[in-house]
Image (cartoon, rainbow, N blue to C red; front, side, top):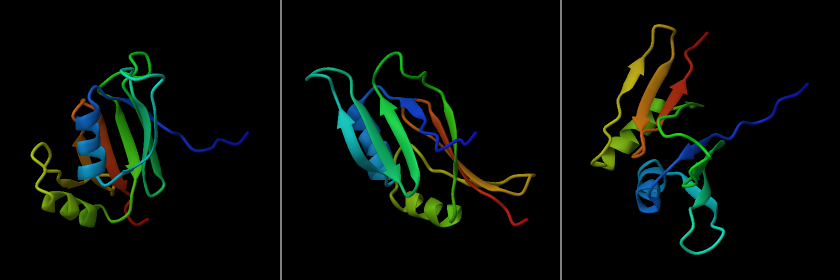
Length: 122
């Protein structure tokens, strides 16, 4: 058996807040978006580097409060970029874990937690 990439689906409730957080703050780009018709829930894909996330306003797709661990390099530099944006709702810190990784945890406006993880040497 061979397993491929995983694409998490995160629940969102407000398109403007989602775009402000994921695109304007975190720097993801919108790859595509879909609605069945006008005034229907939004489903979209955002990406940054090799990280791909699906964001959904659809009730049954996911529950708010999920946590996603994202493998990363350059967590400290990314943290400085984010802090320089002076985003009102998040001032992320970087934590050195007992198991040797450096991690930056940020909650989105819907309670989902993104943890950017840089593995330590060895």
